Structures are given as C-alpha cells and as structure tokens.
Length: 320
Image (cartoon, rainbow, N blue to C red; front, side):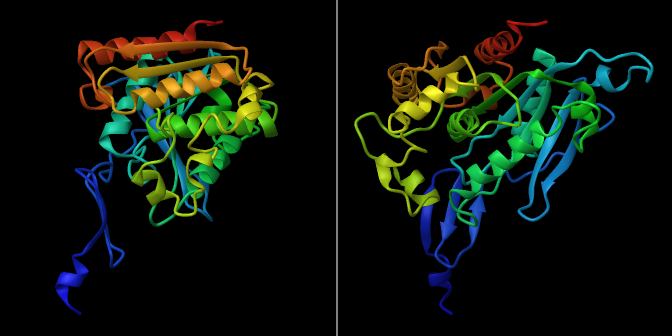
C-alpha cells in the first residue's frame, strides 16, 4: 500500500486531534493517564476507578476528600454534596484519567468539599454520537442507584459519603453540552427519585444562534439533522427545556469567558433557557480577558481560582 495514502488526513482539529483516512486516530490532549490514589494524595483527595458497564466499557473516577476515608469507623460521616462531572474535548478527546481533568476535579473536591464522579464516556470516531450521551446517562443512573441508602449501590464511597439530597452536574465545553442534555433527560424520564440541586455549564458547546453547526459536530455526529438537532441546539427542545424545573433542577450556573469563540453560544443557551418557560434561578458569570477553558490550563491563576470559588459557592449555597 502507498504510504502516502496511509498518511492522508481525513479530519484535523488543530492542535489537539487528527484522524487519518486509514482509520488511525491521534489525540494530542487527554491521552495520558494519572493513576488513582485510593489512600490519598498531597492534595488531600482520595480517588478510585470504577467500572459502570463492562459491556460498553463505561467507567468513572470517584473522588472524596481524604478526611472522609480516614475517620474512625465508628464515627459517623457527615455526608457531602455529590458532583457528577462530564469532561470536555469536543466528544472526540479527553478523559477523567488524564492529568488535566484529574487535577481539576481533585481541586473541585478539595475546594468545595464534595464527592465527585468524573465520567469516562466513549469518544468519536471510534464511537459516534449518540454513544457519549448514552454512556453519560448510564453513568448518571448508576450514580442514582446509590440513593436509597443501606448500601443500595455497588460503590461504598457513594453509599457512605454522598448526600443524594444535594446532587449537582457540571462540565466544560462539550461536557457542558452533556450536562444540559442529561438534565433535560432527567427532567423528562426521572432519575430514580433523585432531584438535581443544580447544574453548571462552563464555556458550553452548542450551535450558533444564527443557525448552522460547525465541522466538529458533523464529525462526531455524521447522521445529525444539523441545527435542528436538539442535542446541539437548545432552542429546538423548547418545552423540553422547561422540564429542567419539573422534578429536575431549579438552579443553573453558566460560566463564560470574554475571548472564548463559544461565548455567544453560551449566551444563546441562556436566552433559550429563559424563553423556554423554565422559571428557575439562572446565574451567568463571565471572566474578562480569558479564552476557552482557560482554567484547565492555568489552574493557579487568580481568575481560575475565582472561577473555582464561583462553582464552590454555587454547590454550597444551601449547605446544610
């Protein structure tokens, strides 16, 4: 076979991803793996990896503050808010196990004093949409299976440490899109009796207000109907968005960045939410002078710390 043919590029999203016509995929972000630390690490957080579905290889990394796991067995634990996190990466890259997302979710757990489940869903092009959404919904139902107490679920850390009266969803970029879609599905189908306390979308990825979708969405979802696809266009769901307030959640935090090329799409989401008839509390936070997901790559900057404080405050504003 002609080696030049082997090297022909089918899709490229510079500088993070390249897919070749022969089926090979190169990911330049999110492919590294940081080991979990079940007995704690220097950041004061314990983590472990769990399998949610062996059939589809859906898994997650679970995080808890170290002081929860080292308390004497006879001393009752104060249960903590539970955050389910969906990573970004355009639905074609990223992982809860890579250094970027492991560090970020660990920081959320330490700062906000929460239990977190960071979901590993299948990626395109090996698995096109709707695989990612199906995996995230399966993960969310798995999390909810722990909500009835008495060791109901398979993961002891969730049974022992998570407060299922305070459950939140959060995600960045494509993960923010997933957050919205999971909340709508939870509102319409129910989530094993669990009501979401709030959802947070950080620099979320949706279609453009003036119509059309970009090549990234067409790549991950080849059979999309385009801008009429409710997964990418929040305005299409209309009355479905109002289900966010019916047994789902009454609080939404949307974080934007001034220089982000997705900023207007985030504002479009907020506008669509308001116009849907949803009557909850919407808070919009914008960071001046920063670009898309800046907080992942400059975690110690003043603006990243301020953004983390916003998320922590959002989760803990009704702290018991």
